[in-house]
Length: 334
Image 1 (cartoon, rainbow, N blue to C red):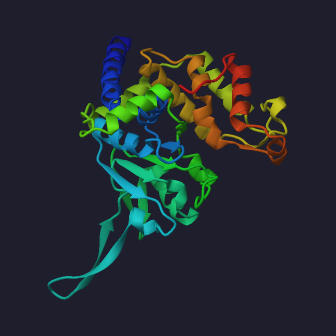
Image 2: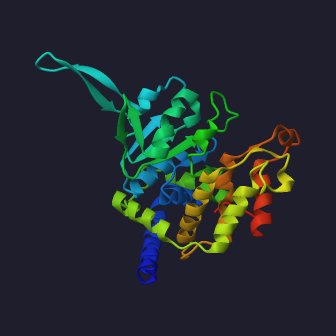
Image 3: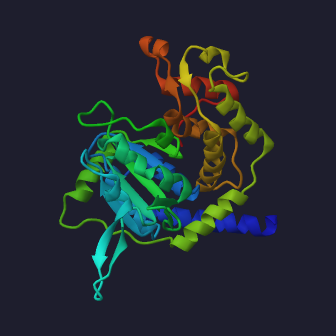
């Protein structure tokens, strides 16, 4: 098996280098954000991009759709958006013979890559329309199960919750995102490059590198990558240490966390560390990958207690502390 697995991993790594090169002219800098987005797609999961308006989140998702060859739709989430605007609905038609029948009109969720733009500007009722789609890759409408695209991914953008007109995402929906990707302000050199590249007469063109079939093969290959026992132990130790009130909880977090990550977090880490190793040209993940992905995988699956918030604690710093204790490595996203 190793004789066929190693060449396949190396070939996929080369394709991913081409994908990064295709993305770079349209989404300048922010390599960490790009790598985490690719990690989510390679792992077969969804990603939540969090940042202020105008930082290129929507542009990145649009670019990824082209590079990965995925059929994409975009939904602009607004306070008046309804679940039927996402899923679709049945309408009553009258045939040529005068008989009436219901006809289903598919909503934008029926695609391979769904861009949920400013997802937290819609009400919780509307946000919940994506729960089944994100977990089961199908939706149930009028009692009928309707499969979505293959593959199916949601890349959602979110404005900081402190901004006007936003609703917090429910915990059940946050848990369905494989990673949370924080999009920060670019540094000076990157912003200069953005100015020069985007204020001329022509925008950079994007070349397709993958097809949907290629991405599905990559996702299967990721699941075949070996993971050493020490890495599995690091994943389990990290996730279980962040669960307050359990036997394996880190004693230092006793009054810092209100609730912690469930088994889906460990599954996400198990897949994501493989994808990160592949993106960095390695054949198997290590504890370094676990430490690097601890924040993106865990931060939206945990919550500080009231006492910790009153003390001014930061959830990211809490995750970094327990990650360093578990792995001996200070966590740093990708």
